[in-house]
Image 1 (cartoon, rainbow, N blue to C red):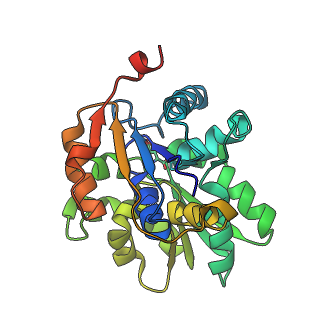
Image 2: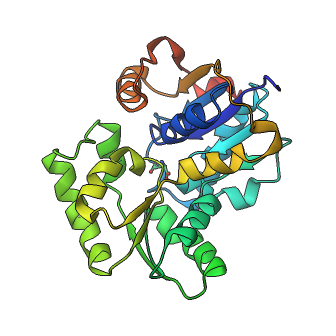
Length: 269
Ligand code: DGL
C-alpha cells in the first residue's frame, strides 16, 4: 500500500464528516486534516477570497506529500475547485459531483433540496450539476449561514432549542415544496443531520456530500484496502481546544494529542 497520507481540509469542523467516512471506509489510510479555524466561515466570503484560502490550504497539505486530497468543504468545492483542480500532481476530489450523483439516484419525484453556505448557493454549482444529470429536476436552494457558527459552537443536538428554531426558519419553505431528497451541501451540516431529519421527516433522504466523496475515492483502484491501522493527524489555524472537544464528540474518540495549531503565514513563508 502507498503509505502517503490522504489530505483533507475544510474551514473548520465540517471536514470531519469526511474524516469519519474515511476511517469507516478506508481504515488503513493515513489522514492529515487541516481546519482553517482562524478564518472560518468561508461561506460568507467572496469567490476571490475563497480561492486564495483554498490555494493556501492545499499548499499547506502538499507539504505532507499527500497522495490525494479531499476538499471536504462545499464552499471551496463549488466556488474554487473548478479553477484549480488540475494544478496539482495528485488527485483532488470535491464534494459537489459525488453529492449530486447520490441525489439523482435517490430522488423519486425529481424535487431536490439544496442547503449550503451563501457562497455555495450563489455559485449555482450544485444546480448546474443536477440539471446536467437530471434536466427535469426541480431544485430548491436555501443558504443557511447560521448553521456553521452553531456547529462550531457545539450546538448540534436535536433537543437544542436555538438550533431547532433556526432549522425551522430555514427549512420550512423547502419542506413545503415537497422535496424527497435534500443535499446537505455544506460539510458542516451532516453534523446536525439528526436535527435536520427530525424536522424534515423520515421520508426525505438526506445526502451527505463528504460520505459520497469518500465513496468515490474508495472506488479508485489504489484506495481499496480494508485493514485497520491508519493514523490521524489534525492541524488547525486557531486554538485547538474547542476543535478537539467538538471533534471528539463527533468522531466518538479523543483527538487531543493529535491536534496541533499552526500559523499558515509562517508555514507558507
Ligand atoms: N464546511 C464548509 C462548507 O462545506 C464551509 C463552511 C463555512 O466555512 O462557511 O461549505
